Image (cartoon, rainbow, N blue to C red; front, top):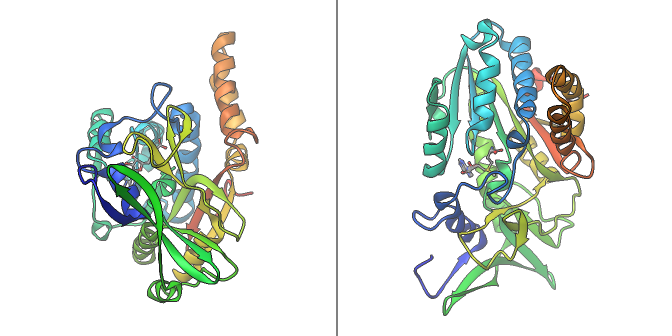
Length: 346
Ligand SMILES: C[S@@+](CC[C@H](N)C(=O)[O-])C[C@H]1O[C@@H](n2cnc3c(N)ncnc32)[C@H](O)[C@@H]1O
């Protein structure tokens, strides 16, 4: 895509190339996380975030799989920070740690290198094929779903069009091609276009949940995502490109900015129902407060100097404040009906 002067491809293909092109993709060239990168994620704001996820994971294991072997699988592990904190916390509970197999499912070779370096002291395996997982499996991913490519469809005068990206003379622009939305719905066996005049859907997300569901249906387990998400049935265009902590034009500087979208919960619910899965969600704020993030902060802050204490609370505030990440981010839990679990959710 980068070397060609002229082409026209569907939006999701464009995003996939912009992020993962072998040589020029964003996640192939860049380490995006942190103050000097392009964006910061919750595990890189405070280790307490990962500790809370750990607490949830071990509680789930205790309730349903105590004393049984379990796979702890992170989807899209970025710089490996979250997995490293989860393993550090797990090691404090021998009876749990001895039963854990830690895995990472990651697409970017560059991220895998960074993860391997960071986690070299620990026994973590990287894998590509979900079918090979034995044992009950807890899948989790922070800002993973938002990184999956999306397709967009627009309705004009009762006709549906798919959004494409074209390159002409080296410049990128959007264009549309008429499509048969009913045929697409039929192929996915999912109806999503009713009462919409705009659609933003990820076929990768659809495929992934199906694959994860296959595992937890056969072996047991569940799926936990933390991501920015909205609740309106009516879909909107949420696609964004971010560089140096600022939104930038998606079609400028392709390959040098992260691209993500905001998850639509009603669409995820449809995918859940189709897979015979239950879906619960709660704001990140409520989830972390319910799990006791403030109590944990108090313990960590005790005996610390004023500035260190302030730093701990400043970071926690970023995670739970309603105007920062607290409300925009949701914790989304997919589970089988018999394994309902509401820790963190109420
Ligand atoms: C926005 S980053 C989040 C990283 C990390 N979870 C965090 O919170 O810091 C998205 C991560 O998912 C990975 N990723 C994106 N699409 C993927 C896919 N289809 N399969 C596996 N990993 C993927 C990216 O390479 C990156 O590591």
